[in-house]
Length: 143
Image 1 (cartoon, rainbow, N blue to C red):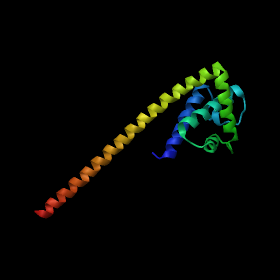
Image 2: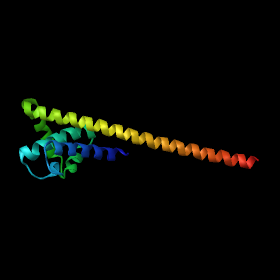
Image 3: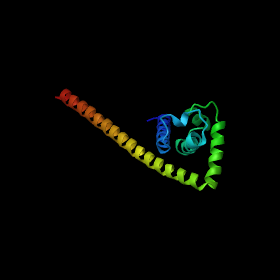
Image 4: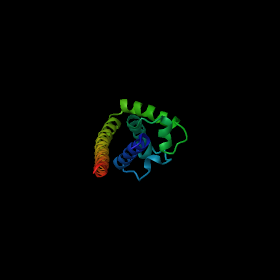
């Protein structure tokens, strides 16, 4: 899996879990709405987690939710830091969704490792069969 594909997969995991946690419709994090309780806080959480786990630029994070520039992401991250320090309920909510997403990403990583392992085993087995075929052909030529 390429780095960009992995980053997109991470964003999808974060988005899906935040939408489920906040009971948003699919695509709720990407909506243009500015309702604080319904979209703004989930989007702040999304940007904070996406920045932590995806390694993508702020402009790329902005693009992932349909924004044209990264100013909204910067603002959301500043507000996140402020609320996280001062609002106990906000901090508890974030910490809970953060734990959920950590577990999902660990699970996803284990799945990816298993897939990669299976692909590696298939490749090795194919190479072994190819080499066996070459050896059989050589033996026939020698006889």
